[in-house]
Length: 265
Image (cartoon, rainbow, N blue to C red; front, top):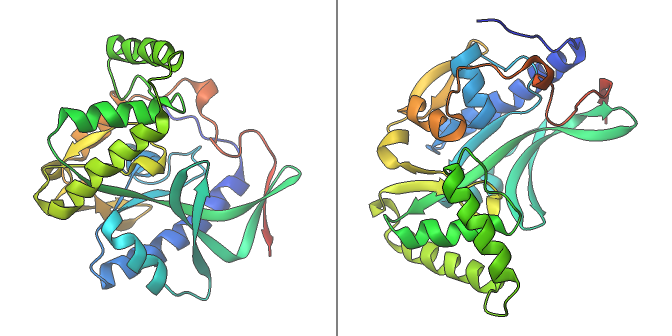
């Protein structure tokens, strides 16, 4: 498989520092029986590259929403801390370094990894419908989540409804919350798992048996948890996930072409 290495030795240093955060969080989760697993590009990197995607500048993991409060209240470290992000309705955790940051061009960014939340969903068309419109609020329907045909229907419907007084996003959000509250009461009896609505992700719903029981896979030579059926999991996110992107797209998502440098706080 041909790979285009992102030519930046400082990026590799940043990856290794983020790996240290991941190791610490994973150890805490294992010690406290918190189910976590590698997600998104981090999972893809483990499967396709055996570690970081060479040009990736982030680490993503998932925990169940029911474990989020315990994790934040009980995780203690001399080197790292968990902060809650609530930006534009997007809610997830960042685990940041207390001692180092990243200079990105003229700006300063935290050295961190992301922790997203998933929750249980019933086998309900209503869940898919309401959650779809929630993400349409931010134009976050993409080709990986729906067929192109269905995507176009949703986008056109959104445009028409927004011109009427009958369509209210607040009511839609309340409807999603109502459905999720009902799911929480039965929680583990629900057959599906998906990102919580306020995580800001596209609608991707997995069967529980596609995730559990978790299995181990090496990432940068260290074993971490991954979904049981990682093939189906990744296909729902990326389709042909083993195919490399065009060379011009093999660049960091967050740092882009900026000059990078690790600095002390």
